[in-house]
Image 1 (cartoon, rainbow, N blue to C red):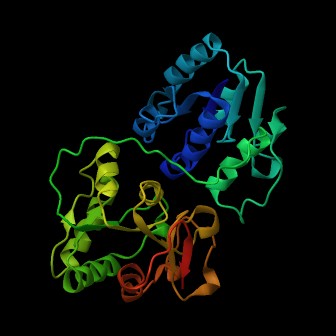
Image 2 (cartoon, rainbow, N blue to C red; image 1 turned 30 degrees about the horizontal axis):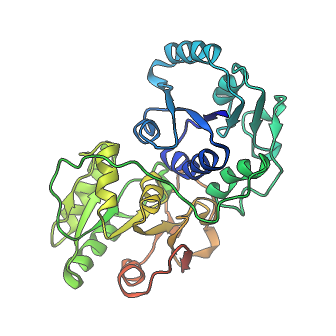
Length: 330
Protein backbone atom coordinates (compact mmCIF):
# COMPACT_ATOMS: atom_id res chain seq x y z
CA UNK A 1 0.00 0.00 0.00
CA UNK A 2 1.61 3.23 -1.19
CA UNK A 3 0.29 6.36 0.52
CA UNK A 4 1.17 9.96 -0.23
CA UNK A 5 0.71 12.45 2.63
CA UNK A 6 0.53 16.10 1.64
CA UNK A 7 1.21 18.07 4.80
CA UNK A 8 3.32 21.11 4.10
CA UNK A 9 2.70 23.54 6.88
CA UNK A 10 3.70 24.56 10.34
CA UNK A 11 6.02 22.50 12.53
CA UNK A 12 3.31 21.78 15.10
CA UNK A 13 0.92 20.52 12.43
CA UNK A 14 3.54 18.17 11.02
CA UNK A 15 4.37 16.82 14.49
CA UNK A 16 0.68 16.22 15.19
CA UNK A 17 0.48 14.23 11.92
CA UNK A 18 3.26 11.81 12.85
CA UNK A 19 0.98 9.52 14.92
CA UNK A 20 -1.18 9.03 11.81
CA UNK A 21 1.89 8.07 9.75
CA UNK A 22 3.06 5.65 12.45
CA UNK A 23 -0.41 4.09 12.62
CA UNK A 24 -0.79 3.71 8.85
CA UNK A 25 2.59 2.04 8.54
CA UNK A 26 1.79 -0.31 11.41
CA UNK A 27 -1.75 -1.32 10.47
CA UNK A 28 -1.69 -1.06 6.66
CA UNK A 29 1.97 -1.85 6.06
CA UNK A 30 1.99 1.48 4.25
CA UNK A 31 4.92 2.79 2.28
CA UNK A 32 4.59 6.50 2.99
CA UNK A 33 5.79 9.38 0.86
CA UNK A 34 5.37 12.84 2.38
CA UNK A 35 5.47 16.25 0.69
CA UNK A 36 6.57 18.93 3.16
CA UNK A 37 8.35 22.29 3.43
CA UNK A 38 11.90 23.12 4.62
CA UNK A 39 11.10 23.86 8.28
CA UNK A 40 9.85 20.36 9.07
CA UNK A 41 11.83 18.51 6.39
CA UNK A 42 14.61 17.19 8.73
CA UNK A 43 12.05 15.48 10.97
CA UNK A 44 10.01 14.07 8.08
CA UNK A 45 13.07 12.91 6.12
CA UNK A 46 14.51 11.02 9.09
CA UNK A 47 11.23 9.63 10.42
CA UNK A 48 11.12 5.84 10.66
CA UNK A 49 7.59 5.62 9.21
CA UNK A 50 8.35 7.76 6.15
CA UNK A 51 9.95 6.01 3.17
CA UNK A 52 10.42 9.14 1.07
CA UNK A 53 10.31 12.84 1.96
CA UNK A 54 9.72 15.25 -0.91
CA UNK A 55 10.71 18.88 -0.35
CA UNK A 56 8.59 21.80 -1.52
CA UNK A 57 10.75 24.92 -1.13
CA UNK A 58 8.66 28.11 -1.13
CA UNK A 59 11.74 30.18 -1.94
CA UNK A 60 12.09 28.25 -5.20
CA UNK A 61 8.41 27.56 -5.64
CA UNK A 62 8.16 27.37 -9.44
CA UNK A 63 11.15 25.05 -9.65
CA UNK A 64 9.70 23.03 -6.78
CA UNK A 65 6.29 22.82 -8.42
CA UNK A 66 7.87 21.49 -11.61
CA UNK A 67 10.10 18.99 -9.85
CA UNK A 68 7.25 17.62 -7.71
CA UNK A 69 4.91 17.48 -10.70
CA UNK A 70 7.46 15.32 -12.55
CA UNK A 71 7.84 13.16 -9.45
CA UNK A 72 4.07 12.64 -9.19
CA UNK A 73 3.90 11.62 -12.86
CA UNK A 74 6.56 8.99 -12.24
CA UNK A 75 4.95 7.47 -9.14
CA UNK A 76 1.75 5.50 -8.65
CA UNK A 77 0.07 5.84 -5.25
CA UNK A 78 -2.88 3.92 -3.92
CA UNK A 79 -4.05 6.77 -1.68
CA UNK A 80 -3.30 10.46 -1.34
CA UNK A 81 -4.20 12.20 1.92
CA UNK A 82 -4.45 15.98 1.55
CA UNK A 83 -4.13 17.08 5.16
CA UNK A 84 -3.27 20.68 4.28
CA UNK A 85 -6.54 21.35 2.38
CA UNK A 86 -5.37 24.50 0.61
CA UNK A 87 -4.91 25.23 -3.11
CA UNK A 88 -1.21 24.39 -3.02
CA UNK A 89 -1.76 20.95 -1.54
CA UNK A 90 -4.78 20.45 -3.80
CA UNK A 91 -2.50 21.01 -6.81
CA UNK A 92 -0.25 18.14 -5.71
CA UNK A 93 -3.21 15.90 -4.90
CA UNK A 94 -4.94 16.65 -8.20
CA UNK A 95 -1.80 15.85 -10.21
CA UNK A 96 -1.17 12.53 -8.54
CA UNK A 97 -2.37 9.39 -10.28
CA UNK A 98 -3.77 7.86 -7.11
CA UNK A 99 -6.78 5.58 -7.04
CA UNK A 100 -8.18 7.42 -4.00
CA UNK A 101 -7.78 11.08 -3.02
CA UNK A 102 -9.02 11.96 0.45
CA UNK A 103 -9.25 15.26 2.31
CA UNK A 104 -11.20 16.90 5.14
CA UNK A 105 -14.92 17.57 5.07
CA UNK A 106 -16.26 20.77 3.52
CA UNK A 107 -16.25 22.86 6.70
CA UNK A 108 -12.62 22.06 7.48
CA UNK A 109 -11.36 22.64 3.94
CA UNK A 110 -9.84 26.01 3.05
CA UNK A 111 -9.52 28.13 -0.08
CA UNK A 112 -12.55 26.48 -1.74
CA UNK A 113 -10.77 23.13 -1.97
CA UNK A 114 -14.02 21.45 -0.90
CA UNK A 115 -15.18 21.98 -4.48
CA UNK A 116 -12.74 19.35 -5.72
CA UNK A 117 -14.18 15.91 -6.27
CA UNK A 118 -12.20 14.08 -3.61
CA UNK A 119 -13.39 11.72 -0.92
CA UNK A 120 -14.09 13.61 2.29
CA UNK A 121 -13.95 12.30 5.83
CA UNK A 122 -16.96 12.46 8.14
CA UNK A 123 -17.67 16.04 9.36
CA UNK A 124 -16.75 16.98 12.93
CA UNK A 125 -16.54 20.22 14.88
CA UNK A 126 -12.92 21.29 14.39
CA UNK A 127 -13.01 23.53 17.48
CA UNK A 128 -13.79 20.72 19.92
CA UNK A 129 -11.20 18.14 18.83
CA UNK A 130 -7.43 18.28 19.03
CA UNK A 131 -5.67 18.50 15.67
CA UNK A 132 -3.79 15.27 16.36
CA UNK A 133 -7.12 13.48 16.75
CA UNK A 134 -8.47 15.17 13.63
CA UNK A 135 -5.59 13.75 11.58
CA UNK A 136 -6.24 10.30 13.07
CA UNK A 137 -9.79 10.52 11.70
CA UNK A 138 -8.24 9.59 8.36
CA UNK A 139 -7.26 6.18 9.74
CA UNK A 140 -10.84 5.64 10.91
CA UNK A 141 -12.10 6.62 7.48
CA UNK A 142 -9.79 3.97 5.98
CA UNK A 143 -11.33 1.36 8.28
CA UNK A 144 -8.60 1.22 10.92
CA UNK A 145 -9.36 1.62 14.60
CA UNK A 146 -7.61 4.66 16.06
CA UNK A 147 -4.52 3.75 18.14
CA UNK A 148 -4.82 3.10 21.86
CA UNK A 149 -1.31 4.45 22.41
CA UNK A 150 -0.16 7.61 20.63
CA UNK A 151 3.33 7.31 19.16
CA UNK A 152 5.28 10.12 17.50
CA UNK A 153 8.65 8.34 17.11
CA UNK A 154 10.63 11.57 16.70
CA UNK A 155 14.02 10.80 15.12
CA UNK A 156 17.23 11.25 17.10
CA UNK A 157 20.07 13.56 16.11
CA UNK A 158 23.53 14.50 17.31
CA UNK A 159 23.83 17.27 19.88
CA UNK A 160 27.20 18.99 19.24
CA UNK A 161 26.96 21.41 22.18
CA UNK A 162 27.33 21.01 25.94
CA UNK A 163 24.30 21.80 28.08
CA UNK A 164 23.64 22.23 31.82
CA UNK A 165 23.10 18.97 33.67
CA UNK A 166 19.53 19.90 34.69
CA UNK A 167 17.65 22.54 32.77
CA UNK A 168 14.21 23.90 31.95
CA UNK A 169 13.50 25.19 28.47
CA UNK A 170 11.66 28.49 28.20
CA UNK A 171 10.65 28.69 24.55
CA UNK A 172 10.17 32.39 23.92
CA UNK A 173 8.88 32.46 20.34
CA UNK A 174 5.45 32.13 18.76
CA UNK A 175 4.45 32.37 15.12
CA UNK A 176 1.46 34.54 15.98
CA UNK A 177 2.46 37.67 17.92
CA UNK A 178 -0.69 37.60 20.06
CA UNK A 179 0.31 34.20 21.47
CA UNK A 180 3.59 35.43 22.94
CA UNK A 181 4.08 35.75 26.68
CA UNK A 182 5.73 38.94 27.95
CA UNK A 183 9.47 39.55 28.34
CA UNK A 184 8.95 40.61 31.96
CA UNK A 185 7.02 37.44 32.72
CA UNK A 186 9.67 35.16 31.23
CA UNK A 187 12.36 37.04 33.17
CA UNK A 188 10.47 36.76 36.46
CA UNK A 189 9.91 33.04 35.90
CA UNK A 190 13.60 32.50 35.06
CA UNK A 191 14.60 34.21 38.32
CA UNK A 192 12.12 32.08 40.28
CA UNK A 193 13.63 28.95 38.76
CA UNK A 194 17.14 30.06 39.73
CA UNK A 195 16.10 31.06 43.24
CA UNK A 196 13.91 28.08 44.17
CA UNK A 197 15.20 25.08 42.22
CA UNK A 198 18.45 23.52 41.11
CA UNK A 199 17.45 23.79 37.43
CA UNK A 200 19.01 26.17 34.92
CA UNK A 201 16.57 28.12 32.72
CA UNK A 202 17.47 27.87 29.03
CA UNK A 203 15.93 30.15 26.41
CA UNK A 204 15.08 28.89 22.92
CA UNK A 205 13.48 30.43 19.86
CA UNK A 206 14.15 31.21 16.23
CA UNK A 207 16.41 33.91 14.75
CA UNK A 208 13.44 36.29 14.75
CA UNK A 209 13.19 35.91 18.56
CA UNK A 210 16.77 36.96 19.38
CA UNK A 211 15.89 40.50 20.40
CA UNK A 212 13.00 39.26 22.52
CA UNK A 213 15.21 36.78 24.38
CA UNK A 214 17.99 39.34 24.82
CA UNK A 215 15.46 41.63 26.51
CA UNK A 216 14.49 38.76 28.82
CA UNK A 217 18.13 38.21 29.76
CA UNK A 218 18.59 41.93 30.47
CA UNK A 219 15.65 41.84 32.88
CA UNK A 220 16.90 38.76 34.76
CA UNK A 221 18.86 38.97 37.99
CA UNK A 222 20.61 35.70 37.11
CA UNK A 223 21.22 35.30 33.40
CA UNK A 224 19.66 32.23 31.74
CA UNK A 225 21.45 30.21 29.09
CA UNK A 226 20.35 31.80 25.82
CA UNK A 227 20.22 29.47 22.81
CA UNK A 228 17.70 31.60 20.88
CA UNK A 229 18.50 31.67 17.18
CA UNK A 230 21.56 29.47 17.68
CA UNK A 231 20.11 26.07 16.81
CA UNK A 232 18.69 24.27 13.81
CA UNK A 233 15.70 21.95 14.15
CA UNK A 234 17.83 18.87 14.75
CA UNK A 235 19.71 20.57 17.61
CA UNK A 236 16.52 21.99 19.09
CA UNK A 237 15.02 18.51 19.06
CA UNK A 238 17.87 17.16 21.19
CA UNK A 239 17.83 20.18 23.53
CA UNK A 240 14.14 19.52 24.17
CA UNK A 241 14.61 15.76 24.46
CA UNK A 242 17.08 16.23 27.31
CA UNK A 243 15.11 18.93 29.15
CA UNK A 244 13.33 18.21 32.42
CA UNK A 245 10.51 20.67 31.64
CA UNK A 246 9.37 22.86 28.74
CA UNK A 247 7.37 26.07 29.16
CA UNK A 248 6.11 27.58 25.93
CA UNK A 249 3.36 29.52 24.21
CA UNK A 250 1.32 27.89 21.44
CA UNK A 251 3.99 27.16 18.84
CA UNK A 252 5.72 24.26 17.09
CA UNK A 253 8.42 23.52 19.70
CA UNK A 254 5.68 23.09 22.32
CA UNK A 255 4.23 20.19 20.29
CA UNK A 256 7.73 18.84 19.70
CA UNK A 257 8.34 18.76 23.46
CA UNK A 258 5.13 16.78 24.00
CA UNK A 259 6.10 14.35 21.24
CA UNK A 260 9.48 13.81 22.93
CA UNK A 261 7.83 13.01 26.26
CA UNK A 262 8.99 16.19 28.02
CA UNK A 263 6.78 17.58 30.79
CA UNK A 264 5.31 20.48 28.81
CA UNK A 265 3.36 23.50 30.05
CA UNK A 266 1.57 25.53 27.36
CA UNK A 267 0.73 29.19 28.00
CA UNK A 268 -2.56 29.95 26.27
CA UNK A 269 -4.65 33.03 25.54
CA UNK A 270 -5.91 33.78 22.00
CA UNK A 271 -5.63 30.24 20.59
CA UNK A 272 -7.91 27.35 21.41
CA UNK A 273 -6.09 24.83 23.66
CA UNK A 274 -8.66 22.13 22.94
CA UNK A 275 -7.56 22.22 19.31
CA UNK A 276 -3.86 23.18 19.50
CA UNK A 277 -2.84 22.78 23.14
CA UNK A 278 -0.25 20.28 24.36
CA UNK A 279 -1.75 16.83 23.73
CA UNK A 280 -0.28 15.77 27.06
CA UNK A 281 0.88 18.19 29.74
CA UNK A 282 -0.48 21.34 31.37
CA UNK A 283 -2.47 24.14 29.77
CA UNK A 284 -2.06 27.37 31.72
CA UNK A 285 -4.28 30.39 31.13
CA UNK A 286 -4.66 33.82 32.68
CA UNK A 287 -7.65 35.04 34.64
CA UNK A 288 -9.12 37.29 31.94
CA UNK A 289 -11.67 34.87 30.54
CA UNK A 290 -13.55 37.49 28.54
CA UNK A 291 -11.18 37.33 25.59
CA UNK A 292 -9.75 33.82 25.74
CA UNK A 293 -9.75 31.85 22.48
CA UNK A 294 -10.40 34.95 20.38
CA UNK A 295 -8.18 33.58 17.60
CA UNK A 296 -6.47 36.91 16.92
CA UNK A 297 -2.98 36.93 15.40
CA UNK A 298 -2.21 40.42 16.70
CA UNK A 299 -3.44 42.26 19.80
CA UNK A 300 -2.40 45.58 21.31
CA UNK A 301 -2.92 44.60 24.94
CA UNK A 302 -2.67 40.78 25.03
CA UNK A 303 -4.75 40.85 28.20
CA UNK A 304 -5.40 37.12 28.05
CA UNK A 305 -1.64 36.42 28.01
CA UNK A 306 -1.11 38.20 31.33
CA UNK A 307 -0.39 34.97 33.15
CA UNK A 308 1.21 35.28 36.59
CA UNK A 309 4.76 33.80 36.57
CA UNK A 310 4.21 32.64 40.16
CA UNK A 311 1.24 30.57 38.97
CA UNK A 312 3.32 29.08 36.16
CA UNK A 313 6.13 28.20 38.58
CA UNK A 314 3.69 26.54 40.97
CA UNK A 315 2.00 24.56 38.20
CA UNK A 316 5.29 23.29 36.79
CA UNK A 317 7.39 22.66 39.89
CA UNK A 318 5.02 22.24 42.84
CA UNK A 319 1.88 20.57 41.54
CA UNK A 320 1.79 16.91 40.40
CA UNK A 321 1.89 15.93 36.74
CA UNK A 322 -0.53 13.40 35.27
CA UNK A 323 0.65 10.87 32.72
CA UNK A 324 -0.91 10.92 29.23
CA UNK A 325 -3.36 13.71 30.03
CA UNK A 326 -3.84 17.38 29.31
CA UNK A 327 -4.63 19.25 32.53
CA UNK A 328 -5.99 22.80 32.65
CA UNK A 329 -4.57 25.33 35.11
CA UNK A 330 -6.55 28.57 35.30
